[in-house]
Image 1 (spheres, helix red, strand yellow):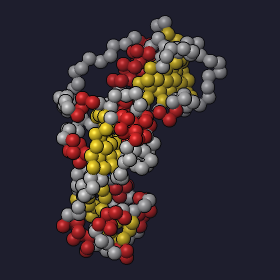
Image 2 (image 1 turned 60 degrees about the horizontal axis):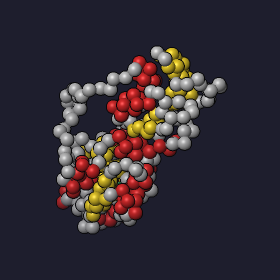
Image 3 (image 1 turned 90 degrees about the vertical axis):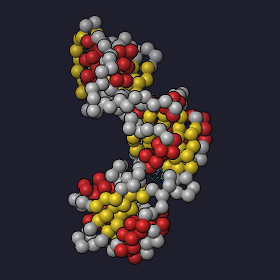
Image 4 (image 1 turned 45 degrees about the vertical axis):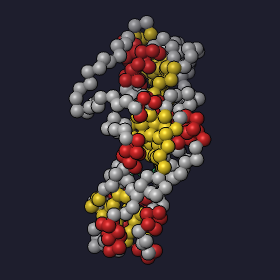
Length: 318
Ligand SMILES: C[S@@+](CC[C@H](N)C(=O)[O-])C[C@H]1O[C@@H](n2cnc3c(N)ncnc32)[C@H](O)[C@@H]1O
């Protein structure tokens, strides 16, 4: 039997009893130390894949206790265990994201949650550009300072919630310049919010439970076609310039993509990209509204069409 316990703060009596009785206890060193698990019964988490292979190879009669931070069903270990064909019992705990919002008393049913734990920051930054309330699982390399640097010029507050549930828990509300220079303690999560978000709650949008009756952007046919060729999604960054820029920006914003307006120039192009490619070297999609270069850059699936007065040349990265 495998039992996964979430843990934020002090271990419960149930977790202590389970760890004491288990043949194997799996977790980070910090958690195993807190439970005083002897070396002989430890599987210490470094690479998750190795630990899961070890668990999968144990006799089915083994009693295994897995300790995971926060809610193990939310950006947690249970997904990987199930992917390996294992079906653990789960005793959950509050997620660190829930605890961070609780620390500032702000509802989070309308928050966007993204992980930069072992992943590039680009999509998290784009989400924070597009949405007023974004929660980020961080790592030592991708933390509050890198987030603040990537969002320079944008009006945002940063809630840095460190070591939640621990004796030395600390929660700071920082402006952009403070966020750039703070010395964060690990582990932590960061909430990135517009300044009003900490004080005012918009009505719950209920997007999945009820239709959103807000007006949609109304655009010319050429902009509609260009948008459909790109189909940007939350986490993408859309650059816009040229005659369709405002209409494309409105559509991209509606889709939850971040938008950067580039001063009009040569050529009039519209592209989506992620932040790593801000130089424009490998955009995912390009729409050219002026005569296109010949030959067109390799690595894209190109299509050409005339819509009204616009000749659109659209390239989607192959
Ligand atoms: C793999 S994710 C697991 C998240 C977990 N399932 C949850 O619901 O909190 C690990 C990340 O969770 C966050 N985290 C875990 N424990 C934390 C704590 N006590 N205080 C603040 N953040 C924590 C950190 O951002 C860390 O990099």
